[in-house]
Amino acid sequence: MTLNAAGGGLGADVAEAVSAAHRDHWATVLANAARAAGGNLSIAEEATQDAFLAAVEVWPKTGIPGNPPGWLTQTAKRKVVDALRRAGALQRKLPSLHAPDEFEEEQMSTLELLDDRLRLIFTCCHPALAMNTRVALTLRMVGGLSTTEIAAACLVQETTMAARITRAKKKIAAARIPYRVPDDAELPERLDGVLAVISLIYTAGHTASASVTLQRRDLASDAVDLARMLSVLAPDEPEVLGLLALLELNDSRRLARETPEGGIVLLEDQDRGVWDRRLIASGLAALQLAYQRLGPSRQPGRFLLQAGLAAVHAQAPTFADTDWWAAVLIYDQLLVVQPSPVVALNRAVAISYRDGPGAGLVAIDALRDDERLRRYHYLPAARADLLRQLNRDPEAAREYRAALELVTNEAERQFMEQRLAGLDPS
Amino acid sequence: MFLIYRDEAAFVDAPPTPEVFQQMLAAHLAWQESVDAGGGKILAGEALTDTTTATTVRPQADADPIITDGPFAETKEALGGFYTVEAEDLDQALAFAKTLPTNGCVEVRPVMPTRG
Image (cartoon, rainbow over all chains, first blue to last red; front, side):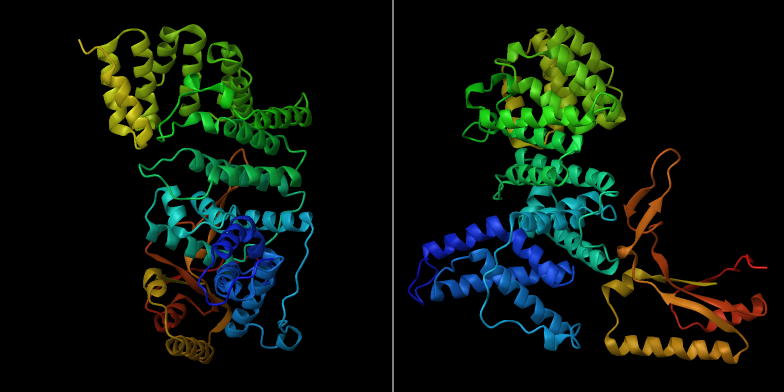
């Protein structure tokens, strides 16, 4: 325990302890407060914020408690009781619910902690909430991100995001969305929605879509953690294991993917020596387990197939050694379960690596009339790249310019401008 | 069945003060008594929370129903409540509907006879 001189401002160690507790224990404190508030997330969230504020005020005087999450949980629960008392909802029950003057440090088992966080996730990802609302709520409630951070990650105005979150909390309360983990019968159906949210959180974390450098916590790591938690809850669900494998395999390339200046390094140019071997091993193990659980008679779902693609790359010692036959086969299967033009486009790119840029161009050109790809910058960007390889520079330049019209990501823009500048304009 | 449609945005953006809300409740109670006094009978009635709290279940031909956040139809005026009123005939029903204390619209629909 560290003791700080009272009144000396917020010492560095107190500030660090508060921010560490915020990073590691926000969801646990909130989940406990939510239970005390009978599932009222608005009251629980306010109480949790108040508890962290109290820590900032009290810890410099009393010292950092031995069990910061216990202290915060106890404080948040007391704030919940205060809030309920103010709301008058507890008038008759109050005598039996007195708040202790001294906080009791609670020791909770790992399973209880897990259960609390899962309960939060399933409430935030309830099918009665719109998908973009689920992502926002999960980031707020489970990730502890501020409204500003969520707005930046989701590319919407802060006021819009604030209204979305307020409205979602109101709906949870008014429509009585239950605060619980679904039972075994409902679980497979409900897992789908949660997996989609976790996948979106990961994507938001690893593609900085805005042109600014986002000051936010590591969303990608949060998403991997959430997938791990779900795999503990549903260890036999192939899609849960598939998502975990997918995120771990993608995350293994994190250090190789970006230049120190924030630019993109393409898969083919990445230094495979800095890929995280531990994450790759773990992802491949999850993938193997997923296929065992799937058995021979069931079709793999989209996350399992995407994990298969990530595994093809993870196992190739060099880009040239990539098993493009396997990749195209997996894309064929993926197109069946996820018939999206984006998947078809990626399949065409895989064909170009397997059979050459000419064959890839034929596959891509089959997609050119798809309305859904009209605003999608990867289509002209992929064509441009193939035309460049075929030494058709003027056409490639035209496609790069078309792609630059559509792109929003600054790193991708710079990359394409470089490529464009390297072409022979004649 | 009296279906009450009202401009929900106005209600949500400027929710009534507790005093105004009490006045509204009192007006409804008075109206309910006036229906009874006028020879009608109120069988049921509820006020609904606004459509931001709604969830819609849409059946699919070959798949599980789709659940979406929000009301069935996004319209300016939304269903805000209903009464089931027993009346002699449409004229009597319309007379009751005219006096219903709401600034919204009231759609009057016969209930389909399903019992004996």
